[in-house]
Image (cartoon, rainbow, N blue to C red; front, side, top):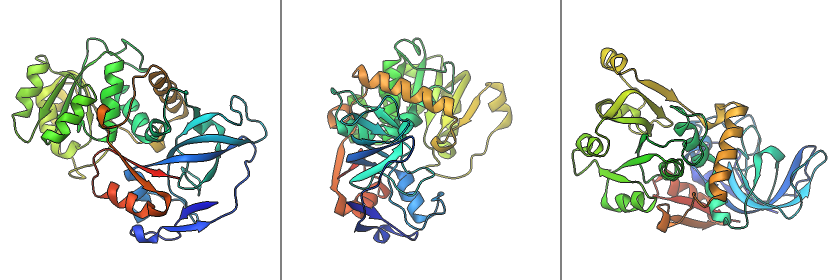
Length: 335
């Protein structure tokens, strides 16, 4: 089978297309014929060495993907040959991820994909959707379902990103009033396509005024991609007792808090990283995301605010470069 591998950290040029034997599933594993692999910033960070890559001599990158089960190992229940699945944490703690024609993976990291859902959607879930779910359940509610966020105002900072897009769609499905911030007209169009109720262009208007116009009493939950640069704005628009759930360090690595202003508002800061979520949180996220997919509440494509950028397997380096360069939308590798 064809697979992308790298044996040393470095720029995208360390990625190589090689031929490897088709793997056999072990106990509790399935083998998936991969249709599409989703590329995330975490894949790039692992490759360059700024995030953990594990102690493996050779790595095939890719945490997310979608495809068809074509072999089932001993002890696997609930999945069968021919099932369409989406994959998450495929390469976490393991050397081989989704940038290959075939992949063996623990059965619990493969989730049934409805016939009504495309492989494109399946490959775009994983990291972004689970991260968005955890952010949205860091505040007043622990699970997402229709109506679970009714009456709440959710602010999504960076509404045109992959996590931001998933957060908008999931929050809307759960009944929240969703406000998204963006930095350009193009990104504003994407946030509106994701069906954010209100979109604020912080580059061209008073962001605090725009947010408070939509949520006069303040927002209840903030999904934050750039806490170091947005904290002053977050505190201006947060309702007393609000949660700021942050999942990235865009714009800076250090956040300085005004202690009195922070405790006076009763704010809660919730950091989150997919790889350190407990099993119960992962299971809840997978179940809720799957329910949203089945309901048609999660979609991809420019018409839903998440443009797709496709690359063939042989051009995986270019796909990584696109993510590293800040491509707006979702980068997919066609296997």
